[in-house]
Length: 267
Ligand code: FES
Image (tube, rainbow, N blue to C red; front, side, top):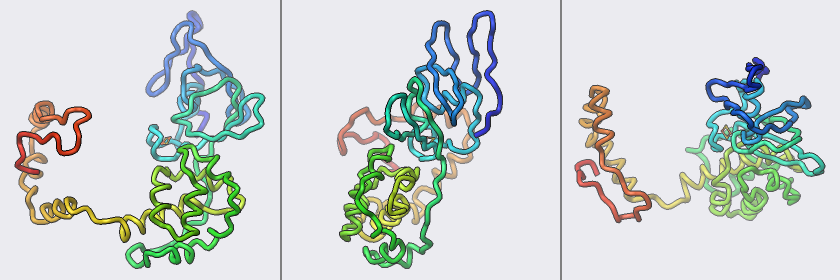
């Protein structure tokens, strides 16, 4: 990110006006001091770290993506006043705290193996061959403590060492590839890349096939939906909007199999 511009200030009302994705600071809103890469800023106390940084003029050209806690691009490390501990979070999800001292780690260099998933043997040995550093793990658990998604990182690494790829795939499912685990690893493992390989193997070779999915793919291949896709593609925008607004909606919290639309032509 760049320090692109300072925030405009209305001196009369002492009210900061913001545009776009930035917050508008209402009268009487409280601000707190935070330190970004060593420099002090006053920011509204209700903002996430990402929005607070934008509020004071940072512009994210790296280190931000989904803004929804999914893409893992906004890893942030911080310390709180009077607290010896190092804290980890996602800038788009973590709300600022007074006197927090933070920096961003939007990318962490890590060894990533090269492989063709089509040619891989679906065994733990394949993982060991591509990532032999796996066995440098000393079970310190720093990786788990650093994970902003509360993934049991050390546990899935242990499962891989024990040859249980299915368990590791499930345990690592919430990983968003931010790399904070690797940043704290005493054994210098790229845990998140190892887990990604394991999930690929699991998804392609180990997980049971879904019969309904197979049937739907066959229907797609047979051209069942070609006509409606063509018609929708060529439809006027207003007609598309009308259809969308009038379409049947699944009720909230409907149990599986409890609801089906009246129009079942394309089911
Ligand atoms: S921007 Fe995607 S996780 Fe924060």
